[in-house]
Image (cartoon, rainbow, N blue to C red; front, side):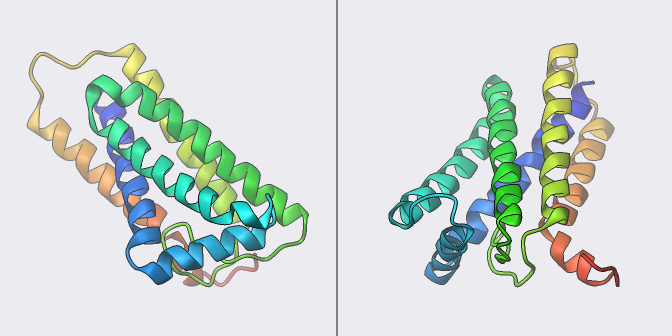
Length: 176
């Protein structure tokens, strides 16, 4: 169970680092993210910049908490709350008929939709599995290199698929 929890933590660290970095890499990235938040119309326009800053800060704090075993439980819990809020926000915007581009990892033209809800719900499940794995198993006395490699490789591939989801879905001719 230790390696399952480790893989969950690593995957989420990579996803949240990519999300925070993608939104702040360039000034235009942050401006685009803030504009997409404003277009969601989930809060007053004057709160757009503070909500954008808080979102990026929450993503960075989540990644930092997940990076250390002593704070990993808090990081997993924060990930569940944050990802749950993203799901709720996307669903609310979709119910309101708003087609807003996903700026989850920087710039993309893909509108927020069901794939993004599913992605975030799956990440909530990953965080929940990570919490359960942490509760079920403590760190082994000696860490096996193969277990570390498998956890790290699984996390890296999973994070890459999450971050590049819009590009992967563009390869599949389905209507969304």
